[in-house]
Length: 260
Length: 265
Image 1 (cartoon, each protein chain N blue to C red):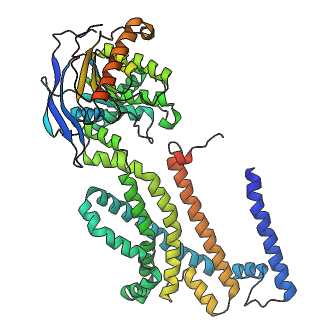
Image 2 (tube, chains in turn yellow, blue; image 1 turned 30 degrees about the horizontal axis):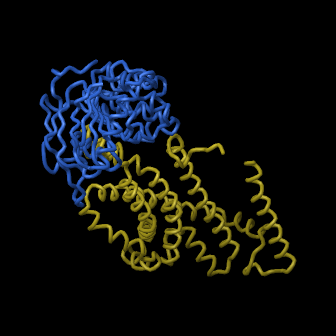
Image 3 (tube, each protein chain N blue to C red; image 1 turned 90 degrees about the vertical axis):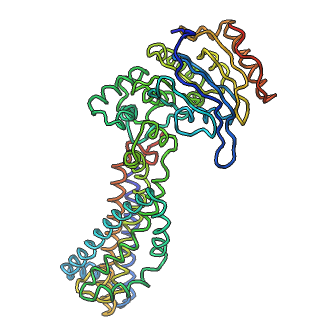
C-alpha cells in the first residue's frame, strides 16, 4: 500500500515530464519561453556551483530566522502568560507586524540595514513572517492547560515556575509543533520575498538568482532554482513533521494509530 | 475501622457560604463537623454546590462567609477529580509521582513511593504506561495512586467514579474501602449515586439544589468490612431507601428537613 502511494505520484510526474519534453521538441518552443526538461538539467549541471552557493545562502538565513522566530515566539508567549499587562501592551504590535505585507516593509528595512548588509534585512523580514504563528499558537497552548490539573498543582503548593514548566509548556508543545510546521515554510517564503524586494545583494540567494535569471531570460536557470526551492520547502516540512512525531508519538492523540 | 464517637474532630465548617463573582450562589450556610476516620458522602442533584464545597475545604476557593477550621492543623490532603485528570505526556509512574516532584522529593525516593502507590491500587507493573494506553478505570486508579502517594490524612473525592461502568465502579468502591481501612483515612466523597453513598459512608449529607444547603444527615453503620455481598442485603436496601427518600425530599422541598440521623440501621 505504502509503495503504491509512493509510486502513483512518481509515475504521474514521469509522464508529465516526458510529455513536456515531447511538446517542446515537437513544436520547437523557444527556450526563453519554456525550456525542455533536458535543457533544465543541462543548465542545472552547468550552473551547479553557483546554485549550490545560492541555496546555502538562502538556507542559512532561513534556518537562523526560523530558530530566532521559535525562540522569541515562545519567550514572548511565556511572558504573555505570566503577565496580562505585557500581553495587552505588546500583542497589538505583534498583530500589526503580522498583518502588514512583508513586501511592503521590505524596502524600508533594506534602507535601514544598508545595502552592504542585505542579509540582515533578509533575516529580519523572514523573522517577521515566521514569528507570529509561533507566538499566537504557543500563547494559546499555554492557556489551554487543564483547569483541574492547575488546581491540583496549587493544592500541592506548586510554584508559578513549576506550573509553567511542568504543566503549561508540555500542554503547549503540540500547539508549538503545529506552528513550527507553518513557520518553517513561511520563513523560506519570507527570505525569498525579501530577496525579491531588496532587489540586490552582496550575497546571492535563490530569490535573487531567480530575479537575475529572469532579467536575462535564462528561463532554464529559473526552473532549476525553483526546483531547488520546492525541495527545500518539502525538506523543511518533513524535518518538522519528523520532529513532531518524535516528541508526540508516545502520548498525543494526534499520533495515535486507530484500528478501524 | 469503626469511627468512635470520641474520634478527634479533623475539620469544622462553620456556616460557610460561597457566592461567585458572577452572582451565582453555590452553597449557603453549610455546617460540618468531620471526625477522623469517617467516610462522609455529599449527595445531591447536579449543580448543588457539592464540588464547590470540596474546593472550599481544599483551600482552592475562599468562602464568602463562614470559616473552615482545622482543629488539629491542616492535614495533608489528597484530591481525586471526576475525570482522571492525568498529564497525558507523562507515564503512570510520573503521574503518580507528581505531588512528590512538586515537593522536591529526591527522584529515587519519589519513584519508589509512586511505584508502591500504583501497586496499592492494583497497577503494579503499569508504571511506564501512558494514560492513553490505559482504560478509564485504570486511569482513575492512577489518579487515586497520585492522591495517596504523599500519605494524606484526608481524601477529597469529587464524583470520582461517575463516568465509569457499574462493575468497574463497584470494584473501585471496594478498593477504596480497603485503602481507607488500611491507612486510617478520612474521606469526603461527593457523588450523585444513592447506592454508592450508602455503600461507602458512615454518614450521608443530602444537599438541596442550588444554592446548596444540607437538607438531611443520615447516619449509617460503618462501612468497615463491607464486601460485594453487602449490596444484596435487605439492610443495604433499607439504608439506600432512606437516602433516596431524603434526596427526593431535598429536591422537592428545597427546605431543610428534620432527619438528623435519628434512625440507626
